[in-house]
Image 1 (cartoon, rainbow, N blue to C red):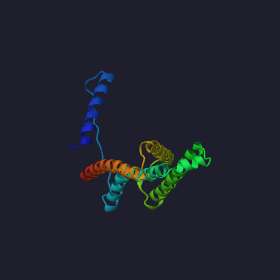
Image 2: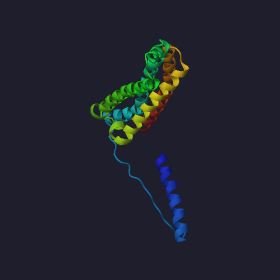
Image 3: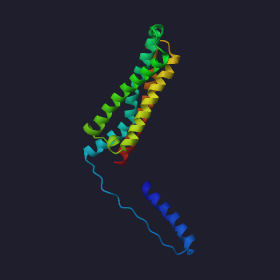
Image 4: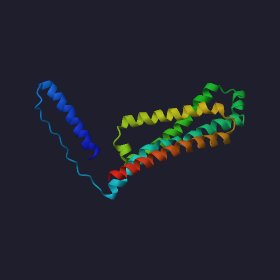
Length: 194
């Protein structure tokens, strides 16, 4: 008996109890069944499933690789006192932060457009083709806004550019390890279903 069969039996029991209560008759007979749909077991279909599962969790990590770059730029300007020199030359801090935000977000948008192009037209993965385009764009924009904002927040706690890169990469490798474990677990689960 598979899990799906157990779910059908449970649905039968609930439906039978409901019908017997509504009809007020204990002689209710209900029979449910299932017809499994044919699946393609070609190596290409199996590879597409694996890429879909692995890709859906690896794309956000790949887009997170820009966070250390954003932080490195800001911390390097702070470390080399470039920000102070710009302030002495009359730069308003509001303009400094706006330009940094726009530059970092522009870099993120460029990377995201490359991801979208390759995901939709070159690799044609389900993650990009089956997801509603509006939802995908909103999610990617939100991810970008959070990356740039986090880099602005974390730069307050770091004084050296080398430290910024190493701490970000350490944090990144920790989350990457967790993600790889989850992807491996899901791949093993899929292979057991095949």
